[in-house]
Length: 283
Image (cartoon, rainbow, N blue to C red; front, side, top):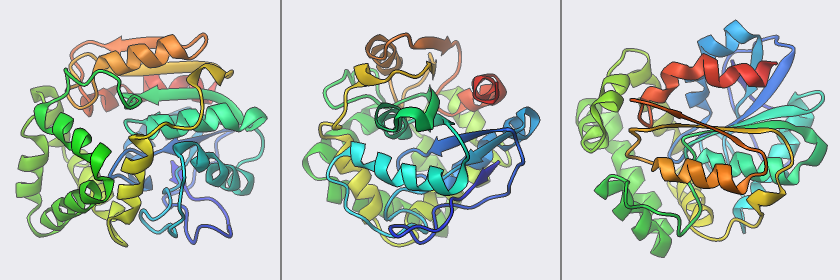
């Protein structure tokens, strides 16, 4: 399952979790208002496949020291430190939701350190179609383009609710989700992992999440067309958090990328196909 990297000048603690002695290693990029802890959702599949997931938190999130990122692509410098400390040889890259662009940046900029790229429900670039997003999600991203600090602060207020009243938080967080996602998040284990990862994102304050919003909503600093490693993209056809059109655009922009749309699945229920999605990383 997930584990953290070794010591580094920029980051105090890059991640946590239990270790797995697999022959292959993958680097996991978490989503927005999320942390390394969400790698736990892939734990059983990773163990079955003999895959070790290295799951760092980004700057200012969880236990990781703050560091200013001028562009999203700058995250690749931090990811390289983690991989140098924790992984021998090339690593498969895995990004979920808003972590997709961060994983793609690593694939574009890390050269031989990247072996493959897998994106799950990846959030697209600024200006990509947002019509199919749930209204609240679409409005939140539009506001984040203008005021990412406020967006981070607002999500941090939701984290306070999550700590004090998990049931209320889950009602708010899932109110616009399709039934398949609400049922997925209601499952024991998934519900607790979701709450823990969200709360951990704001362990220090909201600035790390605000920085994620800022770099996601501005030019990323790399071209998807420069990615040269094998890439696969998975997306639920019923996803109302990130439109399936974003997956199609990623697949069109990344040379040779393979796209698989999962009928009936949304942004969270797609995790039921974790073993299928991770299998190429362990090959």
